[in-house]
Amino acid sequence: MKEDNIRIKIAEISETAIDLVKSGTELTALESWDSLANVTFVAYAISEYGVKLTADEMLDAKTVSDLIRLVESKLS
Image 1 (cartoon, rainbow, N blue to C red):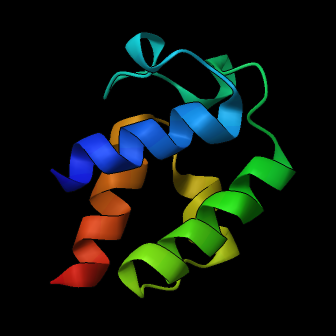
Image 2 (cartoon, rainbow, N blue to C red; image 1 turned 120 degrees about the vertical axis):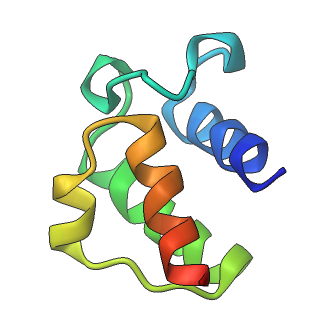
């Protein structure tokens, strides 16, 4: 369920149709994914899951699944 919620949020942040945001989708392939999108996602992770993501972690994330794994790793 978290995975679906995170995918939905990534689609919302990047202004991309949800069916185009799959686990293997590269973040750079999302037209509106930029530094502001990164900051927005960090704020979402804090407010929704109570996890803090660092700038380095966000820069290392290359795909949607990377972001999902990152958030999930902070929850365990």
